[in-house]
Length: 141
Image (cartoon, rainbow, N blue to C red; front, side, top):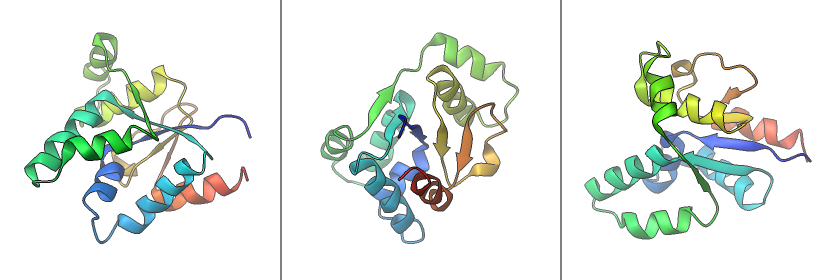
């Protein structure tokens, strides 16, 4: 299979970290695909700081969690160009605009998110829920 590059939205990573009851199992399936080297997964640098903030707020060991996460997921930079493109994109949700710009700048095939309605159509990038992502990954087995 050609390398499939996937950006995980912040909510997917937090679903695992916080073991959110309604979303944990599907997010776990996404992470299992990553661990089985079926895909190359990324998060944006802003996602890392958001995760840290939320985990500390929930009184969880954010340092430990991020160290484990970064063993299987790579981090993509967020620079001035990405921020400016997000600011001028016209998107209402700035965080999603940044995620989209990161994906476009880094040849990402898919963004996995629970909030597909928050992402506008992106050229050459599929926006998939965790459930749809698992179906997508199976096409390449």
